[in-house]
Length: 201
Image (cartoon, rainbow, N blue to C red; front, side, top):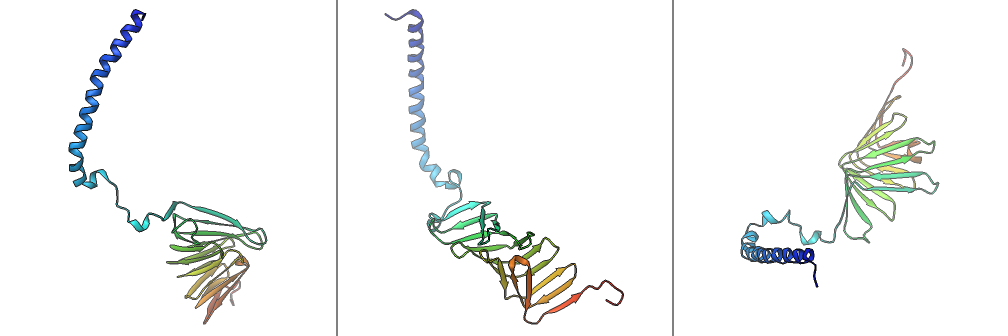
């Protein structure tokens, strides 16, 4: 036999359900009626359309990749965004990539660009859209494109290149960077302006 308190609770629950169930049914009926009209104005209910070709594309915001070379010297790649066609794909497209490498002497060197294509298996990064190289010692390089070999610690470009350093300015038709910035060679017709310490230059 139910106690008076339990009976009162049960009565209130039954009364609430009698009001709630018809309200839910009414909402469902209204949704069924209104839904086709909402679909006609898809921009209200849906976000930006995604092409079927993008369904398998992997996208990551602010990715960070860290590795070491054959001499256990670290390197790091960061970007605003990364896109990969599939999980098994070798190439990764990078937006505003930045690669940080450690030189033979322990100094850091940074390469930045507008676009990048990272070939993971070969540890190569193709940079484009304006490439800038900054060395901890105050050296700077600028070129339109560059290819970085992360495993070997080298970089190269066939595009016109300018360089600045505390010792002077250099311009060439391309460049080769070895030993993670320890040696930089300007290729093609190169011109250098060196700063002297004395009056005679």
